[in-house]
Length: 243
Image (cartoon, rainbow, N blue to C red; front, side, top):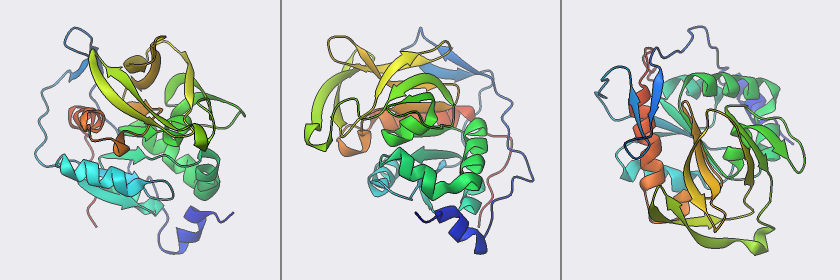
């Protein structure tokens, strides 16, 4: 399998010479419909620039949804593009293939980005963000204190559309070879659930957010809007580099 990021290294190699950081400590306000607040009233002065990791999966559906919500979108295909964005979406696909395409160096750079800036993973992206991966075990970014089981909803033929809940509101959810969150650790907020057992399907910890389904394939924009709200409220003390 081609190491995509290694292949791109002749074009430009990402260097984190200037550490990105955020001085805001995010507070989860559970009393106002789980809305994120910050210790400062930081209002965005421009539309957020969101990167969508465009190595595999339906990254273009994420692009369209984010642009509909007013974000500027960059399809990330080279590691040098990580320092040009305010937040990142890791789409669905196959998590093991993501790891192979990233390569060791690309994975470490992605891991550093996820520690510092808002990141949203869907399906395979959620698997990569998890602290623990089962069926089989796999390295992850460790950004969210959850255990997640790959392909827990069955094979491609078992894909389905279900109705879950975002808070107390109904939400259409498209599951395609979806993983299942089997453990939610301390510090993780459950945003959306599915089924009679209220299985967690959207979770958040700090500036990382994960969904086990494909919100980009439904007409409801609220999950992506929640991520954009997170990006706006996190802010950044490091200017985004423009090409």
